[in-house]
Image (cartoon, rainbow, N blue to C red; front, top):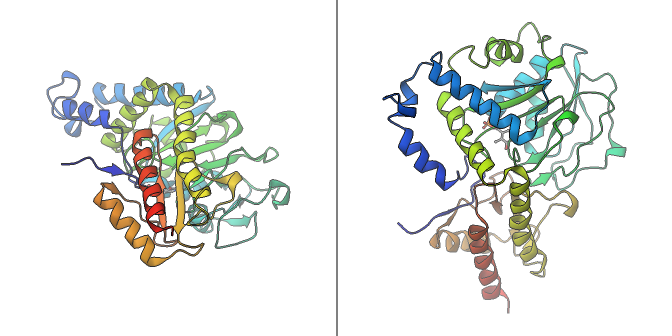
Length: 365
Ligand SMILES: *Cc1c(COP(=O)(O)O)cnc(C)c1O
């Protein structure tokens, strides 16, 4: 089969080396003679893996000792509920900075459990993040929630906002481990694994110790961080295979030079695509304001700022013919979206860039 270039937004490309490791370990995990798929979650084998994956998270992100690392079920959206259920009982209200479809969804979920204050004026375009001086923060909020990278709209925070002592909670599903972040600036960092650090079903949660111990009484046990922490993320049977894959991906990141190396590559890859867009005289159109452009997800239109249906279809068809796949924009925004996660190589992005140049040349008269 000819090479396929996967630019999908999620579940997204995994590093190719991971597949050899998984194949080798699939039926005989670390010399046990059985697969991890049929191993008890209470076995010493799994306890060792559980500790190993936490350790690699701690090393890669320099997680301070007063933060707990949890593996939670139900993916990124499970945490949309878990965040208010674990944190909102302090004051009954929370601040949400809605900058795209995912933070909008998170705010909607939180409304089931308490009062949600929208920090920035509602919009449906999501092409910028309003300056922090304009934010309507509530000093009484239990926490301030942001989505550090909006996977659908391609809007990314490049600076950590100052929430004046109110715990900052961040959904990092789609830019987890793409760069160094100062964990101590956050109360909670969480994300589903299937975009940048693994496969679906598990959420990685990093929570400051003092924020535990006060869940809402209705909080389901399986979403309860305090119980997860007391049970070392083995309250019930965890998504073991997803946690295993996350561990192998994180070890791969470590071998490749860690988060600084990922950040350098992300800048290179996203610049390759954005440069072509910028130099295309409007043929390619990027809606997102320059200072908040995502280095992970690059949405763009072809032909005009609203897109040209025929050209976009032709672009996608030609891309597929070359093995460049999963480039279609999210159905809610249309157009094209190229995702340039950690596992996508510079050479792969160069191939897409080359195709974009040729497509532009073909259509400029
Ligand atoms: C994909 C995604 C989610 C949802 O993750 P699921 O595991 O599908 O629930 C949440 N937030 C962001 C930013 C995402 O990209």
